[in-house]
Length: 131
Image: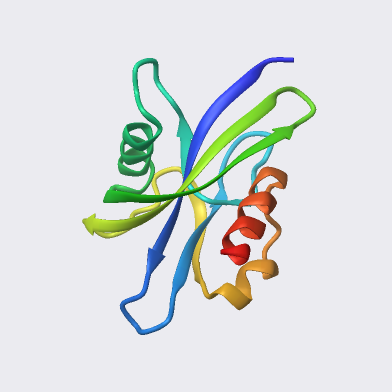
């Protein structure tokens, strides 16, 4: 089975006094309509942190500071094995523009279970809530 290595960013905002996490709804492909933490494939020679900063710039038109490592999720989808490295991020420049997703939401910790997450992202939600 083919393995795909990706990165995902859990963008956090604590400016209103409560921690909120940014989720996106996939707008294309087999997983269209499912919710995920944004990110994408690593390019040869990139560190996970470099790949994540590049992907979030491409998908959301923002510059981020990549912070604490959260978890690596391993998940078998029907057509491939996914290895997903996940990090907390914060936006340092720009405002979110959805360039590849059909919707987005800022969620408090208690709201994280309220979305139809893609299967691999369920593991990320569990890791966030365990911290």
